[in-house]
Image 1 (cartoon, rainbow, N blue to C red):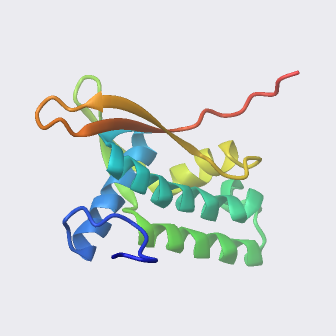
Image 2 (image 1 turned 180 degrees about the vertical axis):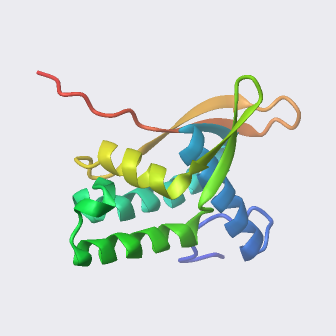
Length: 154
């Protein structure tokens, strides 16, 4: 029995599992939405939400330009950047229409886009939508995506 043991193992050792979730998180951050198996999406939610929460906790320091920060705030931001870099790759490459390769800085995207988007949200930054079974092996598939920005409603 696996009492008090969180997380699924996916038939992989710990380094393979960590690499898999680093890559899944990088793709989710870069594309804002990915399709994967239901079990991987549920585990990826834990990884992705921790990254966004780290960025949110420093407040406006995350998305303020570097020149406008005090030396103490620069240190806090550097600490956050290093913490995020330890959890996912710094850069990823996306192919645009026409075959153009665009390099995306994932850490800056978290700080500038997601920390600002979810600044007032206490959690629940992702949602999982079940898609049905995969054609080849009948594995349950799901789409995991970041929630849209909240609009001011009356």
